[in-house]
Image (cartoon, rainbow, N blue to C red):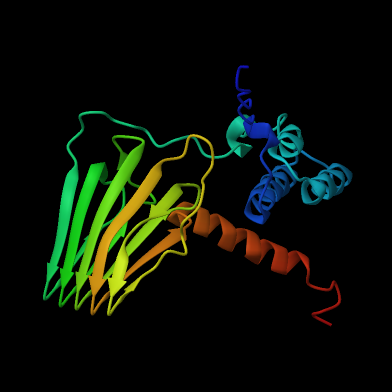
Amino acid sequence: MSELIPEPVHPGQIRTSDADRERVAAVLREAAAEGRLDLGELDERLSRVYAARTYAELEPLTQDLPAVGSSLFPPPPPAYVAGAPVSRSGYALAGKFERSGPWSVGPEFTCLAFWGGGLVDLRDAIFTVGAVRIKAYALMGGLEIWVPEHATVHVTGVGVMGGFDHRATGPGAPGAPTVTVGGFALWGGVAIKRKPSERELRMRKQEKKRRKLENRSPDSDD
């Protein structure tokens, strides 16, 4: 008897997050401000946005607006650039180091903090492969590893009279990179955190400000 193999889930069937709905709402409000939607259309579409549970329900709401379309689906995998020069290690010896921004990361990255601190920020990194292993060692020091929100994360490191954070462990979106973090912390700590990119943070901040202004009572200035 042959084993049944489940069919892959289409991106449109993936459930949306609050952040996804807010991004779509921001696109619609911007379209209304530009005169592309009237107030009735805006209200109707916003109602559907906040009732949406999957990406397939969100996508049609912006299909007739410029430069959005398929961008509502989960982010595509990073631009894998095979053979590109990569950074392979970072050391903080009674000091500090940082890898952040659009830096290239290969299949393995080793970091050590001894009486110091280091940051490995993968949110905007250029992945040369789909799976990356981080070897993290904190000796009387601290390391922070920031991973993209949609990444698949495995944490195998241990703390010996120190802390090795496992809370970021979990599956990611289809096609997103896989990050495995191993190593140990001795009288130190390794923290792994899922974080939105700087661009996503700016978008959320702008949307929060916009909603705050819209929720003000019309007679609040009286």
